[in-house]
Every structure is written in C-alpha cells, then in structure tokens.
Length: 179
Image (cartoon, rainbow, N blue to C red; front, side):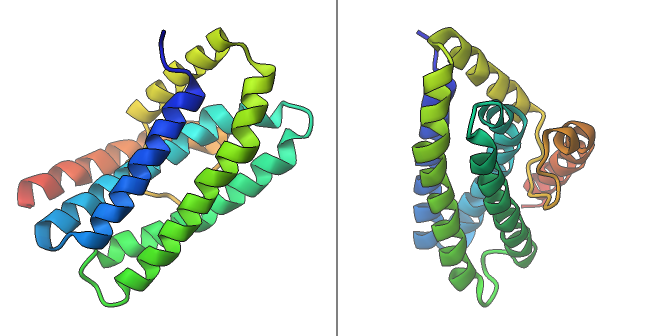
C-alpha cells in the first residue's frame, strides 16, 4: 500500500523535528548543512501543503477557518525563516531565533495533525489520500527550496513557485560548489 498524504506529512514532521535537533546540537559545517536541509524541507513542505492540503481542507465544512489559521502561521514562519537564512547559523542571535522558529513550526505541525488531518481522513477515502500524497510529492519536486513570505496561496505558489524554484535551485547548486 502506498503512503497516504497524512502518513507522508507525519513522516516529514518527524524529519523536521529531527533536523531542528541537529541544528541545535551540531557545530561548524555540520550545523550549516543541517540548517540548509531544514530550510529546504520546510520550504518545499509548506509549498506543497499550500497547494494540495489546505485547499482540500478548506472545501470541508468548517475547514476554512482552520486553513486560514495555518496559512497565517506559515506566513510568520516563512518571514522568520527567511531572516534567519539571510543571517546564517553562525550569526549572533541565531540561536534565540532558532528556538522561536522551532516552537512555532512544531506548534504549527501539531495544529495540522490535530485539526487538518482528521478532517482529511473523515471526508476522503484511502485511494484519494494516496493520490494526494503523490500530488504533494509532485508539488515538492518543483517547489522553491527557500522561504518566500507572501507566497502562501495555491494561485501564488503555482504562478510564482516555478520561477523562484529555478532561482533557488541555482543558488543551492552554487552554494554546494562553493562550500
């Protein structure tokens, strides 16, 4: 049986928790690497949720206010993540912001797991949830790898996402070559 969207996102939330722990405990190049992996995962994960998951939840009776709250959380996290990515993990004050980001992101994941996922499970059969997982994976494959605050709607993600994704991936490749 293929993963359904809820299983996939639970697994990604677990990976995000692990990456926060790595960034908090690592030093030097290992810390920078863990930070870049965290930024990338958070960026593609949120884009896919904004394109696939949130619209599905918003169509459920009572789902719209739940989605509005999640999108507001994502916007705040993207702003903080963008600021921190510009600073870099060695900057003064980074660790204080990291604790704030971690707490915000993990609370956001908990809210999704407690409010959104049960609605999805309630209104969609297993086959639909599996197709949604494939859609999330496809969205992540072309998603930006850096945060872009203000690009939280499905329309904005579809219109701007591919363009900024190309720029992000070029920057990632350059960063990798330069170390």
